Structures are given as structure tokens and as C-alpha cells.
Length: 166
Length: 270
Image (cartoon, rainbow over all chains, first blue to last red; front, side, top):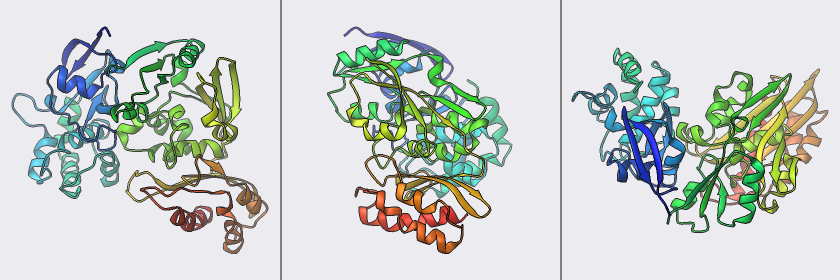
């Protein structure tokens, strides 16, 4: 079958590639453009580790078709830190010991970023809901929730909102 | 295996394509279909994407609401005119699922999923269907009963319903994984009250049968009942009569039948 063209912005960079039709966004990001930050966990849309932002909304890349993302704005972990400085969310997860094996971490971070971009001052219930699509087998969730809340109540959240637009 | 991807702007053309090709499937949010492909379902050979702004539109005129089949749960959760449905939409999966999951797709979700369909059922929704026979409307109860026998190429393009009185609509979804896990059961109800008595009642259950179902015996028992604990208890006793839940990884048939009256009682007492 002939390959099809897709064009979109990934972490601020214009991308134009030819892909097999029916390619998922996850496969496109990892295999085509070499962004390994979104992970392949369940490939069923249930674990959340493939969570990326598409036009500001959290999406599960493993069940999203790249052909449905044409002209879209995609954000992954790879675009979170700028000039070698960690994003406040990344720093918060480090500070709160909220990553152990690290497999859920990309999805947690992008889900948290989607929340803070839309609501810079979430309460605990907001954070729990925002992360409700992300499974963690290591931390028991509490450190991650605390880490996200710590960003929401500090000045760092303003940076988050300002840097949110790619 | 490469899956083809075909877009259509005309529902009739999409319908013909779907009817003619066994391996073609209509794509909504992808939470069911792309998952199946990922899991190795080789019967799926072509994704069909129906385009068109009306699919993603919410129209509210007086109290009549029309939802395009492509409207997502996250859009509904944020729509001011549909505030009463926000708790239902927010109970479906996590935020990333809600960004993709559609009204139309939810109607085809297998039990114990499909909670938005439960709410639509209690709202007496009517489904717009495109097929080779043209356009027709079908009430949602009949749709659910004939869901597995729809003509090849049938496409749900919209649902419509009348918005209930603000305090009449109630919804609860019970999950073991909190928040937003798959349903042990869900209950949607529209209960109208006049002077302390139920003047009209519609109740629908999710995860209590192969599809969302109306609880006709319960509705009859509730109509005219006073809203006292004793009378609600009496009415709720008939609740399990219209149910045939399955046992699955979330809960057993026995458990679902055992707790349904409990959650029903709590929902009706508030």
C-alpha cells in the first residue's frame, strides 16, 4: 500500500513524514521521528503511559491515528524541558520521589501538564481526576499527587501556563 | 498489517462503503476499534472516518438537545447547556479517554461499559441512523435491542432528547477503581415529583444486562409512590427483575444484583 503524507507540529517543530496508513500516533512518535518519551505500555488505551497532548488535550497515542492528527500541535515529554532546565513538573516529581521504575512517568507528566495548562490551581480532587487514566504500579500514587499539587500552589505554575503554548 | 484509512463527507457514501467491505469499520474515538487492531484483530482492514461539522455539533433549541455522534465526552463535560450530563461524561474513563470517546461510539460499547448510553436511554433519546435504506430515526430502547442486528453499513450520526427538569435527573456510577474505573453498575434516573409523590419515573441501568436497559417494573412501582424510605424500599425490591448482569473481572452477577438495590435506594433518597 502506498504511504501517506502527514504534517504536524511536534514540540514546536514542523514535521512532515510519509507513513503507512493506519499508523498510530505512538508508533509515529517513537519509530518515525525517534521520540521515545511516550511509552508503549498496554497498547489498549488503559494504562495511560502513552499520554501526549494533541492541541492541548490529553490523548492516548497508542489508540490515536496519526492521520487524525494532521495539522495538529503535539506535545511530548521531549519538549517539556527548555535550555537544559527541567520543567517545574519534572522537578517536582524528582523532589517528591514520585518516580521509581519510571514507566508511568511520561504519561503522568503529560496528564498533569494538561491539567495545569487548563487549571493552574487544581485541588486534590482535580489532580486525582486528571491522573485517573494513568496507572502506576510502584509509588501508590500519593507522591505523584503531592508533586503535582506542589507545582499548583507555587509560582512555578505560572511558568507552566506561560510555557504551555508551544 | 497496514490498515487503510478512508474519509467521507457524505454519510450515504460512507454507508455504502461500509456495507460493501466486510473489513471496513467506522471510527469514532478509537478507544474500541484501534484497541482491537492493536490486540491483533485481523478482520479490521480499513478505518472509515466520517467528516462533517454537524457530527461534532451540540444543538440546543428550547429544551430539545441534539448531539452529533462525534461529540466527545470532554466536550459534553464542558458544555454549559448540558451541565446535568457533565457527571455522566466525567465518569467515562480518564481525561485522555474523554478527549477521544464519542457519543456514537459509547452506544456500541460492550457492557460493563457504555455509561453515557445509560443516561441517553433514561432521557428517551432517539438515534439518527444512516444506512443503505436512507435516513431513519430509532428510539434508543429499540436500538439497543437490535444493536447486533443492524444492517451492514448502518451509521449513527446523532442522538436527540428532551432536556429534563433541572432537579429530576440523577446519575451514579459505581466502580471498584476510583475514580473513573469501569462500572460495577450505573444508574440513571429521571424522577418527577409533585407534592411528595413521584409523578413520573424513568430508570435505566448500566452493566446489569448485555446493553443499557430500562427498569420497567421499578418505574411502575415508583410511579405514585410517596418519597418515604418505606415506599422507596418497597419499589426498589422490584429493581433486579429487569436485570441479567454478567460476571466479569469487575464484579460477579451475584454481587451486581446484591448491591443494585442499595445504590438505587441511596440515589432515590437524596
